[in-house]
Length: 176
Picture 1 (cartoon, helix red, strand yellow):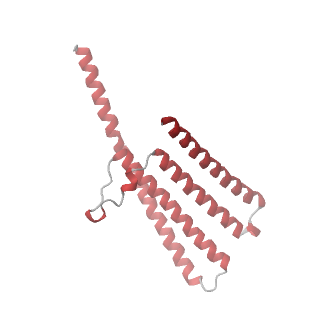
Picture 2 (cartoon, rainbow, N blue to C red):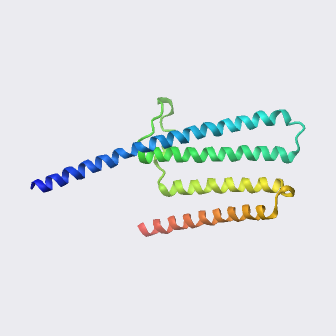
Picture 3 (tube, rainbow, N blue to C red):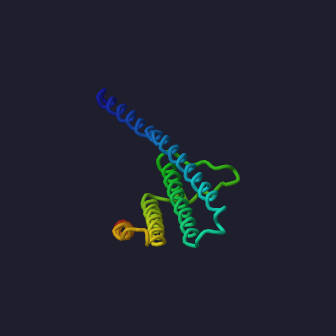
């Protein structure tokens, strides 16, 4: 092997190591997501503290709106968790759990990009549906254009989800 070929091999090996080590650049992003999860939990607690004293005198539409807001926050938190878990597992390293919870996270390692993509679009669709329900709870206070726009956004998300699932199905049938 010539000196030139050895130098090429060495450069390629070092670049490969650098690219592999670059996955650690994602850590601050996942820490940011973890902090955002804490903020979402704080908002849920804040909503509960606000809602409980008014519960007996609240109109049913206000109770429904409060519950929908909490479900909405829960779905956003689930979305953050999916991105954190699968991103870490796929790009940084294996998730480590305590000895008592071994195997409780096995679903993460089984998720490929297609599965994550479909879960994310399903969560976004559910969030948009809740926003639309909130609009209809207060339809008398909502401008018609805003209600139509929210409906169109939900339909667009639904169509996008169906197209993504169809593309994955077509791609998987081509592989077999």
